[in-house]
Image (cartoon, rainbow, N blue to C red; front, side, top):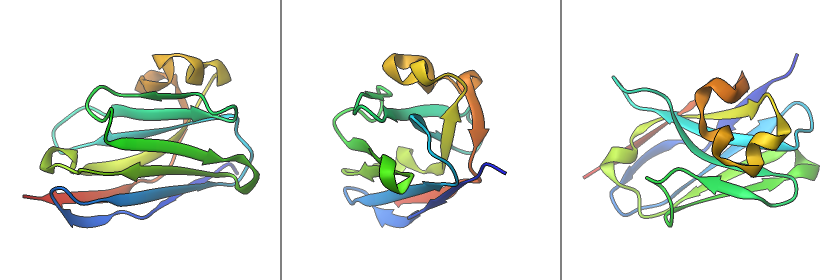
Length: 125
């Protein structure tokens, strides 16, 4: 069974940093981070592929950095300069098509084939 396991969530004050990790049960070429705040739709945060191509949602550009260690089957999300509006459950995800990571297609929830269970990130003001 294909699985994604997120870790690294927690509580932090505004301006602080957190690093999320996602360990997969299989090797994937393209992986993504999404987030969902209460009462809001799920939002694409960032995607990365094995070749190092990355894409970011507009709300996190310049503050978040996605990276992948393909050999370790692990995806990371370094989150700096966190804001209260970053508070959400963060999900690791596998797009249906590997090509999704070459464009912004991978930031659309409908492009996702596999979801992790999520990790909570809370940013206080």
